[in-house]
Length: 369
Image (cartoon, rainbow, N blue to C red; front, side, top):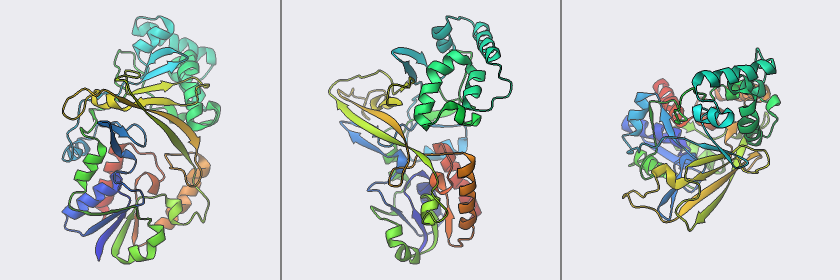
């Protein structure tokens, strides 16, 4: 018998496994994929740690979380400074004085603020009712039209006027020349990749990959006193109330026999016509070098395509509208009646979590056990 069966070897499940094991509990971790680390999984290609399920940059203001992950990995000093490509014009992301200077020729913060206020006033927005109005009130119409509208509509598959304002409220806008996208005290990438970090987290713990929980549910449940389930909450209940919606992402990976493709880890393509949302060049997460500090002669790029999720696809982003919120609440009510099962993580809670938030959520749940 195990004290806990943990379904999912991503960050949430791995943190729970480590902490419970250290507390003297006997734990079994399973995952339907053939690898650990969930969506933060990295695999080595020509010495490059490729982020298999999209770019993951660790950032947090939570010192407890930062100290925790550093038990399992040494982090580099990577700073996320993405670039926007609008039909060949390059702009700084986050929106800062470099962006405003390129867009309007303004030089001082006062000139930039005045330009934004003028465009906001022209649009007549007092209380933003949707994403478009929220964006214009933050950065003006020019930047919205070139750098937000097309990208956002590709990302969500919906017009900006049909998306809620809160999606873009955390958009970083600065009247400074600070190119750091995240406003976080701690930031970096684990040297050697996330898979190595999670493997260290799971050291000494029994892990079985390529195991389908639902295909073996009764047998697996009988082996453990409690279950921590990190998969989709609606899948657990066999979708009997309906299917929760997600946005998914498809990746086209390419190994190139050149040392530099775009000179930056992330370039967002913000026009509507370009079919991909961004291109990731993975080597720049670790400054173009391997773990021994050697230059890497080749490069790997990934083009990302956002898509509407359907059963069988990988779910990435919950669709946080009223309909899905109500449906999730009904599933949550069912989950609370399950004595043996604890639901957690991005899919178990139908919630978009940054990595540090996943770890903090695991801590909070463990404190209740």
